[in-house]
Image (cartoon, rainbow over all chains, first blue to last red; front, side):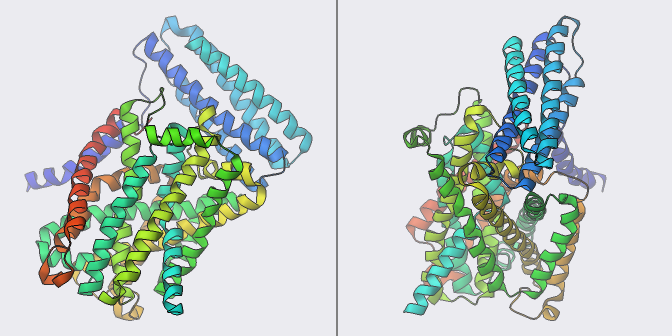
Length: 152
Length: 410
């Protein structure tokens, strides 16, 4: 009976292990190179989210997207940026990686702020605020790009 | 003659509109944004594969008057039948969850009302439709509404891409420099799984029994499969092309349904966006009905219960009970706040893993003269079926190792 239970439990354990190994965990940095890789990955992901928000806000400025849809897309980007920042923040930086930590954290904070401004502007459908939000997003994209070059 | 032509046209149109579901929407968009058109060959391969096996299972239903699981248990015994039932049903149920979540996300994009508020309402609406609506109504209404997704094709044209570059990416199949071979192969398997989802074949063959197909309907069935599915596959390619043009150059990864719609808004404005949202709703709601019915079909057919919508609900009580319970369970899973897009991403990969359990029995039955008489597989069907079975087994074995190595495609 025990053997049979074990056999039945195996597929469930395999599935759980697969999902865990498949990307549901924050893995620790094993050294400065590993930390640098995680920083680059976070900046890459954040850039993608900022570009999504930028394209949405640009489309809204041209009055080519429904307000509800624009709101959802920008809100999703904002939430994703928060998650990226939290995930990166949870990784313990090796002592020699403080400059990488600082530049990446600053850039991610700037990205989250720009996305927040964009969400507020989009939800209010305020033309002037949307124009400003677009400028902020472009500036944050530039900051992230520079941080990424620095990390690489 | 005119009536027959109308029937063929309606069948083909509903096959096109019904081809795309949440798995196709999300996977094609994600692949286009990361790999450009370099994985277009997988869509072509997957569409040909689903055509081969859908034709086989449709032929089995038309000739024998019985659906797939009904025959799998009888022909291959209860153990193989149970393995097939378990594997296929697990994936179909996962897809059912993803489709209900997809409908909720589509409604959220149109209304800004939180998706978790929509989920119970959508679950209830799906159950009401499955309980009250006729089979042909479900198939025709959502299939025709799903044609709204043709707006992706219009969007590609309006975006004015470098056609030569798109074609170059597609025929060279070269992956972008920043992507590893393992990630490329992982997404190839996900795309393959999305195109060859097991429920499509079960729904197709069970639908044949619901609509009382006979050998006389083989022509109509084949026109639906060989015209409708490839044209539906073109929609998948158009979705990938849209994200290739808009997102690939700036490194955006597609993780939300809103991002799938964004290139259409960029290209066609509010009207195009409204049309694509209708298409999202139809594609996901129609697929939710299909997967919900497929769960009931497979359980009912395996246990030999009365099943289907061709009899009054009271006469197929256990079938309707399974449909109701699976709908409640799907909504309950979604209300744990699991991300429907993540469920979709996993469901297409697990779909690839379960493919041999679905398609091997169909190949066996389509070769059995006791069931098929003179309609057994010919050389071409057997050659293609066997080649695909080998491919399916390879994809199935490679899926989990690739999922671990690539951290689910990260």
